[in-house]
Image (cartoon, rainbow, N blue to C red; front, side, top):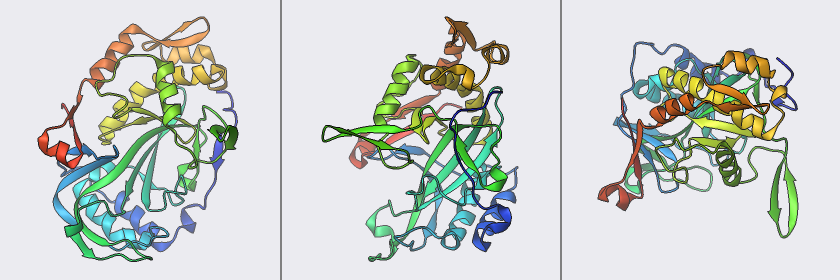
Length: 329
């Protein structure tokens, strides 16, 4: 495989350098019984279209520093969440240094997955800042701490991120296979260049990616919930219900799609030789005028995959400003 050009690659301290609380969090994840299944209820989008999931119980979120979530503060929360949603944490490692760094109140867990042409990271991250109702507050916040609260839901993101094969998450490394190396934003009739993760809105680039893909397979409006989003300088796939079987299914579906997306931004041979792509994805891709294109049969498979998802909004949900995401089993 050819070298991937200008990969965003950052190395962090290895496992031995992690602090005690981080080690304890990883130990909780490593000791999750693979036979345990999630005890969760419904998936929702809130008013600003962030995902959250409910569970049949209550957990206490302690007061969190306004500056950042410390891992010793998060430790009891991880224990509780591991009881309700063990399948979401299985086979993941704690990402000790958060990416992007602006997400100082999230917990991030990653798993590396091998694809046919390139590899992928699955990132599962939860945000513990207060997002519930005021009557659930246990201890009020102040200028230094967010309030402690009781909740039956957790806000999360679940991303499948293309990454280079040489990436070693055991050493805390993080990298993505980039679609672009800088990002441009127009402001006051001038262009400003950004080369960091967290400084601009990615909505327009997400729209551009979906426009380039130009296939009608999604059962949910892409304006309400895009399954493919621009983040970490690349095109990521949203895995709504990130159990291990669902992550595996998403990987099989998304790798050919990402190859087509990548070829619309860059020379595809910087990702892999075209002959390798044809050989390894003969059931999903064909080469037309020197570029990979999704086969009609594969597009039908994509339609079947996305038909499982539907958005529900009844009167009660409308009052709350929520949408419920249902998944056919």
